[in-house]
Image (cartoon, rainbow, N blue to C red):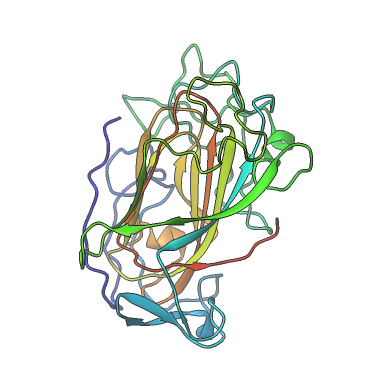
Length: 314
C-alpha cells in the first residue's frame, strides 16, 4: 500500500456540524481504504453522555496555539495542554508466543480486537486470525492459503501486551514529542524509521538477537484527551500492530505483523460512529506493538496541537 497523503489544516475554534462521510464500516473517507477505522457518517444535534462530554472536563479556549484546560479539567487546574505525549512502553522477550511468530502475517489484518475498549481502557481480544486483506475488495476478508494462519495466539497472551505482568514484561514511562513542521503551520509530526524508544540495556535488552543491535519486542500505550474541532485528522504510518480508539471506539485498525502501513482518522467523517461533536473534549487511546525484527517505523501526523495525558489502570 502506498503512503497516504497527509494534510494541513489550521487549528481554529469552530463549533459547526460535521461534514458528511459516505463510507461503509471500515471505510472512513468514502474510499475503499482497509486501514481506516470502522465507521463513517455525519454528526448533528446536541452532545449527549459518553466519556467525551462533561462540562469542566472540556478543553476550552486557545492561547498561543495551545488549548487551555479549565479548572477541574483533564489537566488538573489551569494548565495548557501540550504536543508532548506521555507513553508507557513494555519490553518483552522474543520468546513471548505473540512475538517473532513463525507466521509473521500477510499484511494488515482487521478485526483482531473488539470495536470498543474494556472498563480499564484496554483493547479487547476478538480473534486470532482476523480479516486478511483482500486487494480486490478491501472491505472483505481474503480467502487464501494463509487466511487461517494465527497472528495472535489468543486472549491470554494478548492480555499481557498492555498490562504489567512480572516476569513477562518490563514497563518504562517516557515521552514522545510532536514537532510543528513549520512555525505557524498547525501540522504536528513525529517521524522515525528507526523507532527504538528502549535502549539496548533497558528491560530485557537486545532481544531477540539482531544485527541492528537494537531492543525490539515492545508495545506502546498512550492515553490522551483532546479538544475536538471540525476539520481535525490524525494519521499514522508504521509497523507492526496499531489500534487507535477515540471516545472508547475503534477509529483506526492496522492489526497484525506487517511492513509500514498507513491509515488516517478523519474525525468529521467518523463523528457519528465515534459519538463526537465539535467543541467537546474526548479521549484518544493508542496501542502499538513492535513484534518482529525486520524494522521499526513510527510516524504520526496531525493538526491537533494539544493533548492532555490521562491515567489508566496499569
